Length: 464
Image (cartoon, rainbow, N blue to C red; front, top):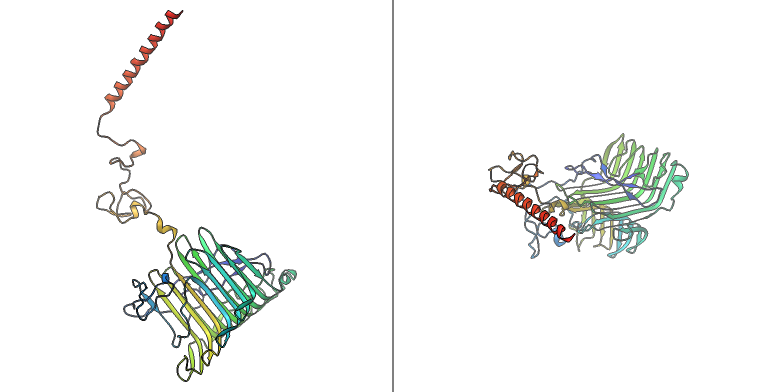
């Protein structure tokens, strides 16, 4: 069993989607989400600014994140936006719709052309609920060399592992994964889910689980991972809530247990070049974090070089810059109409001579927004519609004593007038006494029956 790790928001405890495989390297299959413990707080968590909210420009519906800046002729100006961007973060783009969780352990460009990708992944949920997921363990020249993709409209799961079978063959004593990748993209009436993961190497020693692929699945004595990353985006279609989580590391070592890439090792642990991002649309919140080194001792982490730093020559990144070295830079945004949140974080960005050489290490990004769930179309009951339906001066449960609960669809209780529901489902009063009419009808019917019978007897005597 594999738990997708993710950084839990300071405001909302996230749940994570589980991966379950029949053997190492098999494509992942989703099961029921479970509660996840809250991860350590992020040093770069967003804080709403004091005072009035700035006026947003653009909207997520238009395909852009609301932001502060010059007015735009097309945009949504009815909501608020709260941002928390680190200094010198202009080189980092805002997360762009649709909802997603993405990231990369390493990206390299030469002369503004993509040269190398190592463990790059993306899990996306479209506005219409469709999903797709991509995992690239190795990419050259912008093309995927080793990896897989999935879509809810086509092949919805895929994956591979060059050393699949070793873990099962040794009963979990030695589990080695080389250039592994798994993707899944599903959609049904209640949920849309996309998840992607991959890694260059994952080693687990002296465990007893035969289905281990990634280091965070290892229940053995020692785990070692190189260039591992994963992202998950999930939408609750009934209520319209979406959450996304992304995390990756260049190197991780744990003597003991470690259940997530965002949690410390409970024994002796080491992590290098780490980045994560997590966002939630319900009560919108987002969190991001990165650090160069992390040391764990008995579950207590120590982060080294985890604050934003910049070395710029001569004095500003841009066309005239000779060197831009940015560490732990990121952006966070929480917005309204529709409400949502997103963040992007990079552990390291090195730009030499205006992208003659560009190196990005530890990039993680998430974006989510509220959509219209099925419950939004349900007509509220009389006892929960904010209307005085029976005109008695009391509105809804519990103020109206004729309401048994908010789901009760009558503020009048068991009413028997006005065509309403009478007691025991009886007929409504019409205001007229119908008993004499009923008695006269029965009398006329009886007399008619006697007359017909006498006529038949007389006719029978003449025909014999």
